[in-house]
Structures are given as structure tokens and as C-alpha cells.
Length: 187
Image (cartoon, rainbow, N blue to C red; front, side):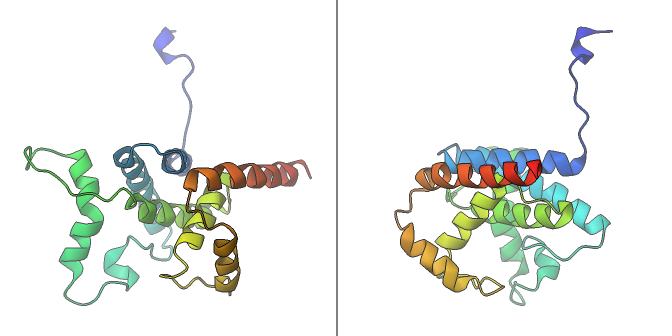
């Protein structure tokens, strides 16, 4: 057998999306490159969207046409905002001289969409995704309404952790969630 073929791994689409999301989350919290973070997150969302469509799942945040979050007449603008960076980072055939004005926090929308759909499709809640979900909810309590009456809890958590330092937050909460996951597995 050829040495090149040794050590291969067999991976399904859901696992590929999980790996991309977890890497994007790690990059995000550790100050990694936002372009790479966005590319990984949007690739995971593409896979999860396809899997979701295959099982007739509920719309994702990024399913602009069916999510109901876009105002009438604004679909073209929304597509450009949501898909523009993703396409820009993958292609140069039509616009090799173009430049993009990209906000480094933009990947968070794709990470959140991917995390929510991954958890729904897999019935899993990995520690990295739990940490990201909590961070997002704490940071955006003033913008989004979160279901299940968690707004009050999130406002309290936000007041307790008000530094805005995502690296410190990650370092604090990941071991807690990882420990919880380890206990659940061993029980």
C-alpha cells in the first residue's frame, strides 16, 4: 500500500462541519485571522444548510429567502451582505483587483448560525460551541431577544463578565464546559 494512503480518516459531512466550526471558534477567541475564521464558518454553514435542506429542517438565520428576517425589497442587499465576503474570499475570476471592507466581527453571525444548526441536527452540544453561544448571547443581549426566558440570566452574566475580553472569557469558560462534558460522558 502506498504510504500516501496510510493514516487516512473517514469523515461524514456533519463531522466536517463540526470540525470547521470548532476551528473557527478557536480562531475567533484566540485572535486568529478573521478572514480564515469567516471562511471556515461559512463553509460549515454551507454544509449544515445542505444537510438541513435534505431533512426538511427549520430555516437557518442565513437562509435569507425563507427565514423571514429580510424586509421586502431588500433581498439583493441582504444577499450581498451575507454572501459577499464568503464569495470574495473564495473567488477572483470576476474581480481580481477588487478590495473588501470587512468587519472582523462579521464571522460571528456565521458561527452562531452554524452552532445552532449543528446542535439541532446532531443533538450534541460540544464545549466549544457552548462557550461561543454563551459569549454571543452575553455580547448581544441589547440587540437580540433570546427565547426561553434567558434574557434576564444573560443580562446578569453580562454584568458579571463585563470586560469584553473574549480571550479571557474563552480561557475561563472552556475548562468549565469541558469538565461538565467529561462528567456526563463518564456517568
